[in-house]
Image (tube, rainbow, N blue to C red):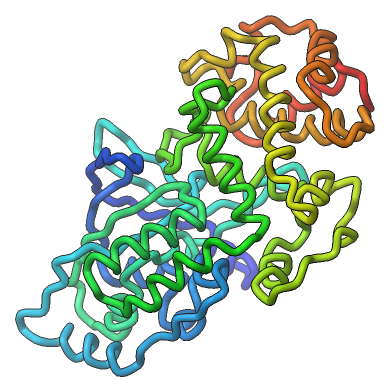
Length: 387
């Protein structure tokens, strides 16, 4: 086997099966199970090689929490004692496209994902980066040189959780358990209030999910579920944020850093034909951008009310595939309308051109995955004729 093939096999040719229980709580669903410490070290990317820096949400919030080397040494020594025990769970987050749960067997499978090209909105996730550590990074680092095969770690796994929810979860857990300084915890809360593309998209998602008149009322799940991959997933907050943020910023971390430093990012950063909503971020026009998204999808709901409200997994219009295709279409329509703030009255006539009825948006017509999403987008483009 060639060296490149060996690398591909190590990064994308493996998967990990975990026996889990699905837990339902107000925040959403998550999975509780146990992972051998060696496997845990292999799939977590906030490991001993990376943890001297920061985790995703800490970077997002503008803070760094370096690994405490003294604590790691103490934990490492403790793991070698005869009665070593970690009774509390390590918290992990994984991408929805890398997780699949078998309800009947109670098995959560974590698998790598390779990006399929320009139309694929999901990032590549190799095996060594399958899980991000929300809480428990010192325990994982302390197990780095554990030689035995008998140390299993209980884990709570959150699927498709966005970075602001990770920060909230970390803050809540550690404030309650006082495992880190309260000043750091309150810094997390304070810094999360700073303006950023991530925060804007997060707040729009929350607002649309909570308003009873919104087309997204109670439709955006804060946490995702590990669905079988032959079924379209429900719309998660992370997916919503990802789809909207690309229209606001070409470099969200750079923009967030500018706000953290007290500067307003340039409105000219990025491509105006791609970052079509950037002006709404820079000019603090949050409510107007929320209105555009509301009115656009209200027009979709008005045109296909049965398909939009259908909870059946075989109807994709309001699920992730349908939403992603419609968000791609939104850019074409917005540029064609040439209006700063179009309303539902502008969108309605465009969707009226589409000949599809409610039954059209099925998994029989549009297969799950990026191929089905791309096919739906192209079919709608051909029908509305705005390009």
